Amino acid sequence: MKVHVINCLVFMLLVGHLNAQTRDSIRWVNWEKANEYQEKESKKMMVYVYTDWCSWCKKLESTTLKEPNLAKYINAHFYSVFFDAEQEGDLEYQGKTYHFSKTGKRGHHELAATLLNNRLSYPTIVFLDEKGHVIQSIVGFKTAEQLEKIVTYFATDQYMKTPWSMYDQSYQPVLIKD
Image 1 (cartoon, rainbow, N blue to C red):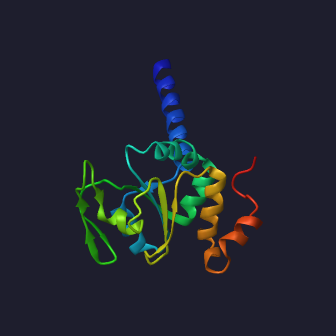
Image 2 (image 1 turned 60 degrees about the horizontal axis):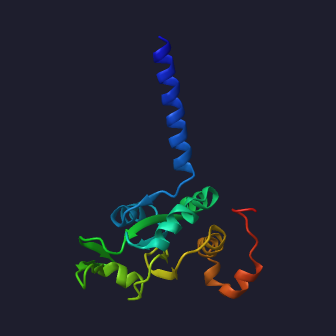
Image 3 (image 1 turned 120 degrees about the vertical axis):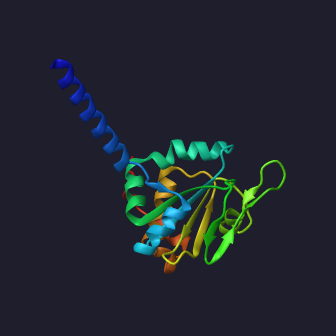
């Protein structure tokens, strides 16, 4: 009986821990799933373009993208896509089919090249509006504080009315406090 009670307690703690992790983590989906969601409820997309060999991508994933308050905010305002720029397989975007293109040792996915305007640099975060049009690509590693400023700029549509330089200077952190 004691073993059964202990097993139940361990299970409940594990489920609680996993639920907390899910709430505090970005809910990543693949390209197809994000577009499926987009058909049901229109929302901006945040596409994280990475490669397996990119050390700055690994650093971004293990630090910035793990910040709980930032993750909650991103989950509330965006469909978040984890997009390997070197993945194979066909993907649809804006009525066109994109393929993997073998070049050199590795190659790249044509959709990555399109989203990044043929500037294949990693990591890059691409923001798309509710209709799937590219708003902006943000290249390179960002701290949680830097990314907070960027995601709030796009999520609140400030990019439509306020130049980045003004927004950047006047921004007061709301998600991540020292």
